[in-house]
Each structure stands twice: as C-alpha cells, then as structure tokens.
Image (cartoon, rainbow, N blue to C red; front, side):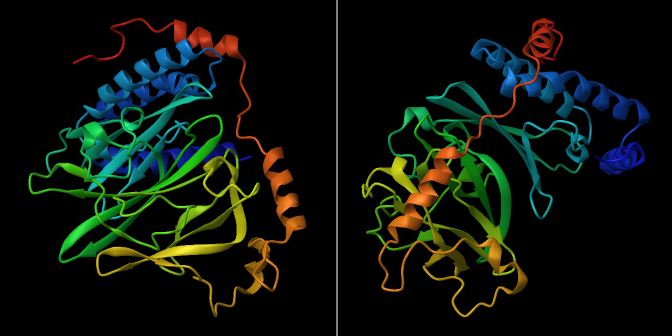
Length: 346
C-alpha cells in the first residue's frame, strides 16, 4: 500500500500542470467537483441495480462537463476517478475519456468525449455517442462522433503519413453475455477539425474466419467471454501485437468459442496502413521474459494439441471479470442523494 506521504506527492504532481496555469480558486473548484462526482463514477460500475447505474452515469456526465468548463481544465487529470479511462494523445493535442455502462449481461453501452487542447484554455468538447446497437456493420465506414463504435480505450498510438497525424485507438468492449471484443480504430481530424473514426488502414488476409471479413474501416477481435485475449501496442517491436485465436469446439465461425492459441500476430504501420504479420517474433530472442508468453497449442506438425487446448479452455472457464461489489447501501445512498440541478446543465 502506498504510504500517505507518497499519496500526497502523487496528488501534488498530478495537479501541478493545472495549478501552474490556474488560480487557487479554479483548482479548488476542480477538486471539489472531482470529489463530488467520484461516488457517481463508482456507482455506475458497482451499483447492483441497473437503474442506479444509469442514474449515476447521468449525474457523473453532467458533473464532468461542469468540471471541464473550468478554464484550462485540459491539464487536470482526475486521478482519483478510477472507473473511467482518461488518455492524452501522445502529442497532447487532445484528451479522450471513455467508460462503460451496463444494464445486464446482454447490454453494454460505452460513453465518451474528446476534449481538445485550446490556446485560450476554453472548452472544446466532442461528445461520443455509441452507435453499436444501431448498426449490423460496425466495420463498414468512417464514422463521426455521433456514430462512434464504442470501446473503452487503453492505448493511443500516434503515426503519421503524408504529413498528417493518425491516432490509433486500442480498446475493449464487454459486448454481451457470450463474447468480448477488442477494437483497433484510427482517429483523425478532417479539414474542419472534426473527429473522424476509421478508414482503409488495415491490410490482412481476407479468408481468416477469426477476423472480420475485409475490407474493414476498423479492426475487431471477438472471442469467448473472459477469454483473456491480449491486444496492445508494443513499442519494442513498434507493432500492435495480439493473440492468434482458434475455436475450442472446432466451430471457427462461432466467435464465442474463440480462445488464444498461444502464438501471436501483429500489425506494423507501413506507408499509412496497419499491415498484417503472422509471425512477429520470428528470429526474436526474448531473454528472461520469454516465460511470460504461453506455449503454443500447436504441436511440431502444426496440429492442435488437444490436451493443451483442453487445459487452456478450463482456465478460461474459471476466469471472471465481475468486480467485487462494495457495500451497495453506501453507494446507493450516494446516488440517491443526487438532486437534479446540483450538477451544471449549462
């Protein structure tokens, strides 16, 4: 556990950039709002009743917008709020917030907003509206902020091509009761500085049933619920590396049966596209961290090792992503204390 002195130091560091650009009154205002909306941020994940989660989401959103209206709020990190993702672009041109609201195990909806860095510190905000439930083809087109395919982002990778910046967003989506998803989407800004998501950035073999049928404007891996699939950018190889998938029941078309095989695939940024590589670690010596990569489920002849596959399947079935639930009475009390008008609706 972090010592109190270190907690204080971390807090002071996280607010230093904001404090350098703002008055004591504005700093106190931001801290006050953060303290007020933190219980809502917890409740929209941990409250037991869906109606309480949705009420908390509404209260949190209004409070967050109120906070962001504070001059130069771009620099404020909201470090005490742990249930949402807050990522700065590598070039600090924008900050993106994403989070998730769950009704039941068949219904998940992502929320989000992009805050742009402005010269005068005023608020320029693009709310993101999750359109996933209103389309049967989430990979099919470039989308604006009102037709966003939702995900909780955990990585931003900045790449350039022909003098233009492209921000690759990597995120997760709990999807439904049978499967999870990992997304790779590319954010760019048009001539009017409006955010656009997706494009013809992905080049990979068209006949792999574990992947979306190409061409796609954003890439998705869908797999068995709690399958533990890894997908992330690795700076050591300058590549997006992800698990190769196979079906544990020999139903390769059924995404809810897909699990990691134990070897890896990748995308490398080449001439403005993420180009597929089916063997990113060829001729690579891992060194003392090699044991962190699981043994492949294929034997020497390239056939599935049924015992390893069965063992891996049992491990996946034992996993759970349901978080421990705090005292619901305390959380629901905080939600019920919210009164319309407490948060800014301006």
